Amino acid sequence: MITPVMPTYARIDLLFERGEGAYLFTETGERYLDFASGIAVTALGHSHPHLVEVLKEQADKVWHLSNLYRIPGQERLAERLVANSFADTVFFGNSGAEANECGFKTIRKHYYAKGQPERNRIITVSGAFHGRTLATLSAGGQEKYLTGFAPRMDGFDQVAFNNLNELRAAITAETAGIVFEPIQGEGGVRQATIEYMQQLRRVADEFDLLLMFDEVQCGMGRTGKLFAYEWSGITPDVMSLAKGIGGGFPVGACLATEKAASGMTAGTHGSTYGGNPLGMAVANGVLDVLLEPGFLDHVTEIGAYLKGKLEAVVAKHPKVLSAVRGTGLMLGLECVVPNGEFQAKLRDAHLLTVAAGDNVIRVLPPLIIGREEADEAARIVEQVAQTWFS
Ligand SMILES: *Cc1c(COP(=O)(O)O)cnc(C)c1O
Image (cartoon, rainbow, N blue to C red):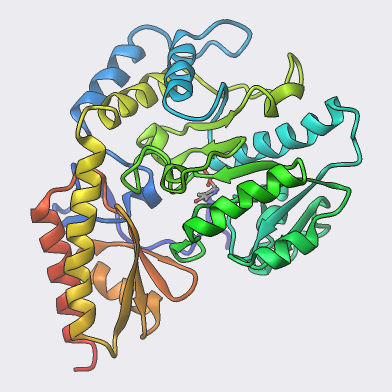
């Protein structure tokens, strides 16, 4: 018999009642170290006092207005995102998929507005993940998620990750843009080289294409910079954000330059809930903390510390784990043994992580962790690795 909750997830039978910082507590009071962060969402940990305060404050004023009226929180957040990025303008939605949909539409509309409607195809790369709507699934091109949902949405051409020759060869007179994750999350914390990202910019300029980065997972301070593109020294024309931006409140955003968004005029796009006052209050609260002097340096410092600790464990257990990938607090444990099984053992030992592609386990702690939590996580990984073959 089907469950009342549509059974699209193979859920783990754990019931968390409350969270505090990097920890989650079950209804029976058992404590888990949460290095999954609701898949890179709770960037400031659970029940961060500043976020609780701004949410409660907004809850007493007004919850929802719709985009028929001005929303001050939206204006403030958009101004701050613009001031701290390449972008000139921002559309707010509620999820990563929705942010990406806005990006795809922005790209298509740009060329339509320029009188080149035939230029409407977007190039993506293998291993990508852009969401679960029909367009974002077609963009991601992953068979395991697409099976049974035919027909695929047309308009996406996929090339191999980190392979510039293949990308150049795929460009046609119909190509409008390139969509790319600077660090693939679901794909297994796969990081493009800085040279590749710089080449993407060069190719986009050469063929007059719009370059869009999907920073839904790697953005908002996760890598130690506010946005992952900052590591490459180049800027995209369009960028999607979600996950960490709301710290646990559903918020998505699509950022664009004025030029890229040339076609996005009144009436061209919308979202009933997008940029809702509650979400905007919390997202502004997240940004308050991320922009505090030294906060992103902390992410870099503690990320390097945790990576070093995990690398030491890997070096001792080469038959179980083979390497640590990633930047800042977007880390991936490369497994020799099946990642799902290792991840389950970590969970049994009260450390929450997330499995990903490429036989990798994602380690995505809240950005507020200190050395104690990093030490505790490394200790649990060590203990599970040590007892693996016994
Ligand atoms: C999670 C994710 C998405 C989809 O976000 P949803 O909020 O689940 O729609 C898109 N792109 C990337 C890179 C992601 O990690």
